Every structure is written in C-alpha cells, then in structure tokens.
Image (cartoon, rainbow, N blue to C red; front, side, top):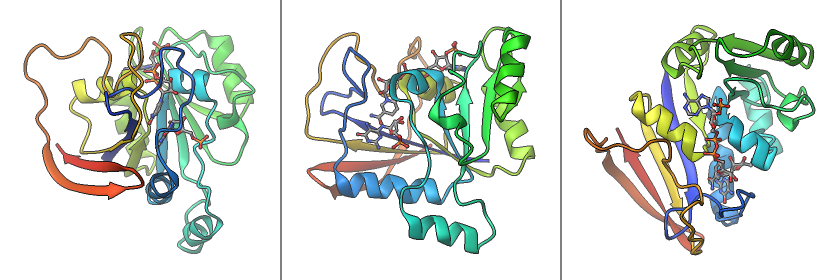
Length: 219
Ligand SMILES: NC(=O)C1=CN([C@@H]2O[C@H](COP(=O)(O)OP(=O)(O)OC[C@H]3O[C@@H](n4cnc5c(N)ncnc54)[C@H](OP(=O)(O)O)[C@@H]3O)[C@@H](O)[C@H]2O)C=CC1
Ligand SMILES: Nc1nc(O)c(N)c(N[C@@H]2O[C@H](COP(=O)(O)O)[C@@H](O)[C@H]2O)n1
C-alpha cells in the first residue's frame, strides 16, 4: 500500500484553531489539487477527531474527475476510512451517506452494539488493537481489500500515529497565509511527539499555490 498524507497548515504549523473548528487555510487552487489527489486514491482516511470537528464528505467534488474514475471501472468516489477506536462517529455523519464505501477501523474495546449500529448504517467495520486502532494491521487488511493508494487528510493525532508506525510514504503540506497560534491548537503531528529517532523525510518539491506554498516530502 502507498500512503500519501495531505494537510493544510498555517504559517505557524496549525491545522485549526484551539476551538478545533474547520478553518479554510487552502485557497481555490489548493482545494483543487486536493480534489485531484482524492480522485487518484482508492480511499481517503481521517481520524474520528476530524469527523467530530468537520463532518467532512471526503468525496470528489469535480464531476469530470468522478466520471473519469467511473470510465476506468472505479467507483465514482474513493472509499472513506475512519480510525475510531471506540466508535464516536455519529450514525448521521456525512461519511455514512452512502455516496462511497465507508470503512470504520476500530479496536477490540469498541462496544458490540455500536458496531452493529455502524454496520446497519452501511459501514464495513475492521477491528484490531486492544484499546486503540492498530494501524499497521488494519491498513494491511484494507490492502487485502484492494486499497493500494491511501490518502490521509488528518488530523494531527492520526498523522502522528501513522508516522510513529512508519506507515507514511509521501507528505504534501500546504502552508497558507494565516497565523493561528495557540498552544492547544492542533498541529500537523500531535500525539506524544518524538523524542528520538525523528523521521527525516526528503524534500521532493516546492510549489507556489494560491498565496502559499506546497511542500512535497518523501519518506
Ligand atoms: N487543515 C487541515 O488540513 C486539516 C485540519 N483538521 C483539523 O484537525 C482537527 C482534528 O484533529 P485531531 O483532533 O488530531 O483528530 P484526528 O482526525 O487526527 O483524529 C484523532 C483520533 O483518531 C483516533 N485514532 C484511532 N486510532 C488511532 C491511532 N492509532 N493513532 C492516532 N489516532 C487514532 C483517536 O480517537 P480514539 O482514541 O477515540 O480512537 C484520536 O483521538 C480539527 O480541528 C480539524 O478541523 C483535520 C484534517 C485536516
Ligand atoms: N486541504 C485542506 N485545506 C484546508 O484549508 C482544510 N481546512 C482542509 N481540511 C480537510 O478537508 C476536509 C473537508 O472535506 P470535505 O470538503 O467536507 O469533503 C476536512 O475534514 C479536513 O480533512 N483541507
């Protein structure tokens, strides 16, 4: 499986404010680049923190891109993948609207009646990990289901979890013209943070987009 992380951050490295509300950091051209990345992926993944904060659709906006996917025999939209250890995703979340296959990655601690509720809502549930989703095992199971190209859109907790398990192949970071600040505002990589063996990706490209810049890193 090839894992591509994409996120937009402020000048000072924040994904959102301390209120954890969705903030448009990208401009139109960057959102279009992200839409193409989604269209090029078999699945788009976020953590449950992003579901609760943003209620995203994770679908492809551009009709021509959806049509191109259908022409090559793929579903119009990539699958959606949520890392959600104990099932905090609300049953009326937009990711369960039936516009794409949705996988819920859960841990063994997920309550069985919540699993049933999610399956009734159309989700395909994969369980691994005692208290928290075991990302290595669940991503391998997704690969077994035909997901070769996985795009991850955040947030910072999930991105750190993937970096910690050395599961990231590429990282696109849009740095946009805003300063957000705040010690409790989410950053690109949160979690416990590294204290040694810091991942050291190589800079593959830098591109000016809208009023900011896209940094392309390879691991
Ligand atoms: N600017 C941008 O590009 C983006 C911004 N955002 C913003 O980021 C914020 C949300 O970020 P954040 O709160 O970090 O949420 P995340 O989307 O990263 O979700 C984090 C949650 O995922 C669950 N999870 C399950 N398994 C794992 C694992 N192995 N490793 C890590 N997490 C796991 C955890 O909940 P549990 O333990 O319950 O399973 C964890 O709390 C919002 O403000 C949103 O607007 C989000 C995406 C992109
Ligand atoms: N690329 C990008 N730029 C920003 O400025 C953002 N705030 C985000 N956020 C991500 O986009 C998701 C919204 O998805 P839908 O448009 O609803 O499908 C959101 O959940 C974040 O992952 N991204």
